[in-house]
Amino acid sequence: MVDRVYRAAPPDALRIEPLGELTAVFDRRSMQTHLVISPLPEILAMMGNEAVSASSLAGRLAADFDLDGEGDVAVLVADRLAELAALGLVGEV
Image: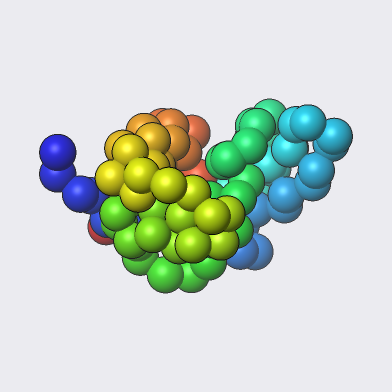
């Protein structure tokens, strides 16, 4: 597995609003609203303005949420980052 590096859209490009179990993410650049579920909003928040890989992000998530099996978490995070990239909310660096 190649550990790709991603960067989130600039903070002023997105408006993120929690809606109970769902989160609405309005992308001002594309004028599209995406409805997403956890852990996508948490991943976006944890990325901040940094370029991050799935493995580095998995380490942060594992520490913050007390998760076991960091390697398994990295695979799941890589899949979620690919989803966010497909939505245009993150870009590969």
